[in-house]
Length: 414
Image (cartoon, one colour):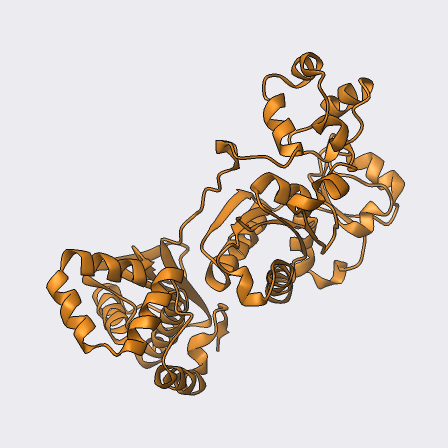
């Protein structure tokens, strides 16, 4: 049985503004345009205490809370943090993630949750990681399919975690108001309540098929299967966004044309890219370098390698070549390095051995029994979850002596 997480960011737009402006933390705020007919796009939980809700006219919200802080909509900010959340999930947990909206994500945790003992602890680790890294709160629903997980995410807001299991559908899901069923809107809720369908349980057990079809349409049967916990249709499939590249950029506090200083920044940035690639068992084939002067546009150039790699020497030498090829000796304000056309290294190893049996036999003959078992485990999980003691000690030594290579956050340099 699958283990699906549905991550729902809490008051996302408002929370993003609180991250960049700590002065408004714990104060009632709404995000809205400032036009005469403006409506509330997002309200934080302090504002909701005054019965302020999304889609409420702004003038009504102000009447309910005289101290309300109104902030202009900033779509660029929300997109930026949405990407950060996605990257955090992919880089730290699993690449089996679907972005269902700008502030909601569906994640298949089937192959990772046991690393945290159970599904709840795994969800808690994700929730804490997002909160500690980005200062953004979220609620997580857990179930065996996408729609039940989504409904579970709405049960304990904010910062809640809730689980729908096959054996608790009747006791936990059915008592909920019918409006909580995914796909049921406000007007449909009113019509269903007019025929005494007040809860999800009422809907799940209704035999009034003609009335349900009149109110909901032919899709009522699918929704009823969801309410019964029996979703197996195509709409329950998760469309994963695979990570196609790894990118990092640096913005300098001061523009510089000092070549030694720039090369040190390039090395730092390359180490970050390589660290992320290795931690996710990814190798890439395309290296891209870009820089920005005091103008707004970026200048970039890329090179395609013969073989897939996550080797730091190979990538850094390629970056230096690209840098020396396109740099115009003007002062640089920002740089970016991208490892593209990435694939899982264990998938790649399987393909190489399938198409080159001789190479496969030669490799296997050189491997110990221990190494063979470790390789099989890592292939199955598509990540390095097992390694020899020697490799582990080498990794720890390398980490302690290259701590800058493991830091993923972009920072400014003096």
